[in-house]
Image 1 (cartoon, rainbow, N blue to C red):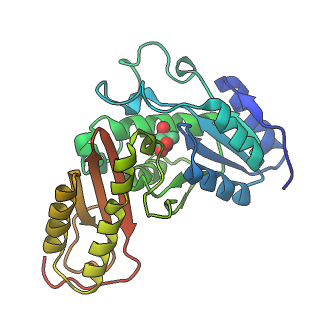
Image 2 (tube, helix red, strand yellow):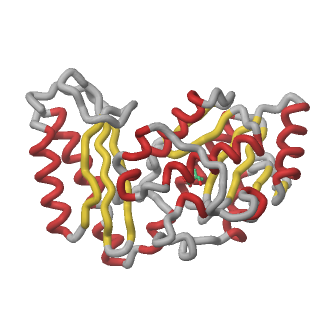
Length: 293
Ligand code: PAF
């Protein structure tokens, strides 16, 4: 693999100038937005981006507007030195690590924000009402800074992906959104920067979430009723020590409740393990028929 110098950009002006220079010389550009604390899931996004475009820029910014005051903004893992090492080793061309004041002027309480469609209010949006507005706002800002041809996101944050795709479509943004499947540990746990919060015993328990999703998928393909499948797994996970936020089967494109005629689905879960909120999902690969809803 060719080793490039990793260009370190911190201001919006520097980022804009570098990205436009790439495009003016005819290079295609991919953006991988992250909040840092990079793990193998992020590195898979970057590797994919490197295969798709001539130039790759990774943003590292822990975005305050997607955290509620009660959430883990201060505690969110940060390890810029290690992140830069990983990105350099992969051959990433540029990293954009702005300060908050570069991206948000003045008070965080008085900002122009993007209000995503109604999908922002369901599932994760119900327990984190501010979240998708913060995500859509920062993603739009990053797209404006970089003007990439493509931007790459992980499917682990599936609802986020839907919100971003809708924003791109509704606001007529000329950027293709690509996604790649969730990267997991050998035990099935979806990689997340927040897994660092888990104690060793919680780490042993956490893969049960994915097992539950697989179990529901099997039941769905076998023609079992959706409500029973979710209720049984809800009880099982609660008994194991999870506190469930939601466990549900939805339409994979709209995230709306399944209709009797639907034959494809996504199973989504959000659950607390101690003080850590974990999310995961599984897209049913096989079409199925519902006995009755
Ligand atoms: O998925 C994330 O890491 C963040 O929500 C994102 C897309 C980088 C926006 O801050």
